[in-house]
Length: 496
Ligand SMILES: *Cc1c(COP(=O)(O)O)cnc(C)c1O
Image (cartoon, rainbow, N blue to C red):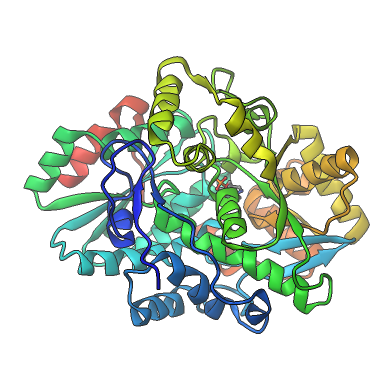
């Protein structure tokens, strides 16, 4: 098998194996680790049809993680995708009113972040072993709401690790916040910041590359890693479900083998959709990757003009996990569409830092043809929830609603009849106030926990285990800090 190496998007030419890329999280030069080439699927698509989620995960992930031995990988997959998920299918595809929804929220924290964060701790544990690292791993994480809880669940009580999560105090749903603040485990730390997700992510990235801080950590026998999608170990497990959606469509007779399909992905940090791009490069027949934004529509503007401009107001929307103006993983796409030109990426990223914007050249613009950019206003999002419920009785969350609304716009604009999978990233139980008021005005005024019960009634479903006892769980984390105090908090926790 061809050995896959990883390098930084920003010029550091050193090649590392996947274990090192996963352990580090971010390259020293501030760039993101990328595979030097995307592996091609080595077996025919039809051979994937009979595989369950775990078998498929192994088939796809071993192509990227060539320095992991098969036993390690199989064990990790086995432990990750177990009864933590409330369905054996792990990521079921369901059809409602002619639309296909890929439900990625059946994990313990009710959002798609579980798809990768349930396996990342095992990948990291194995990496530490392989690299003979004898240090405590400190996992720094910024969250727009869902990564935080998923990372806390994944790393709680994992020996040799501490997990520290920063979230925007004013920018997550009440359920998301309660999920994080009630996290148990002596190695877990959750801190609210007076700022938005971009502030949290900038702070984390800055600390991950701060030489003097890294030296002090090292002197104390500790090392940073990251659970954000800047870590390539988050992206690789996400490639799997694109293939899984395809085999489910195939097995239910909706498509023929080899037929092209589209995916419509609600996007924030560009991690999920980038995994779809990698799936396409591996050989999955994808025609368009439809990038769905909310009112923070930097990516819509970028895909349509080639200009990335974060200098604008940050909007707090009802799809908070997508309230992001600096989409970190776009850097990995830029690297790919520039023909792996790390010098160019460095200069674009320098512009972004200095002026808040950059423009790509015409050749790179042409390479954006795999994508379609659309966005949904708050009104569009709310109408999407209403429409889907009124016509099919199916309840979608606010992020999935952005995706659904953008797909309707895509249909109108392109008249493309290619079968399209709407990537469904969160359970409606996480965002009940906006979901329920879109279904019926009479729910306005009820609190989150009353709404959870109402949602369970109208869907005839059980309240998911992950939030069942949330109302009465004690809050264990109470620290709030200014956005420029993140490092001080870390120093306090680590006593360095
Ligand atoms: C994180 C998240 C997204 C955005 O995914 P990215 O990989 O950041 O683009 C969309 N929906 C939900 C529910 C999320 O938690």
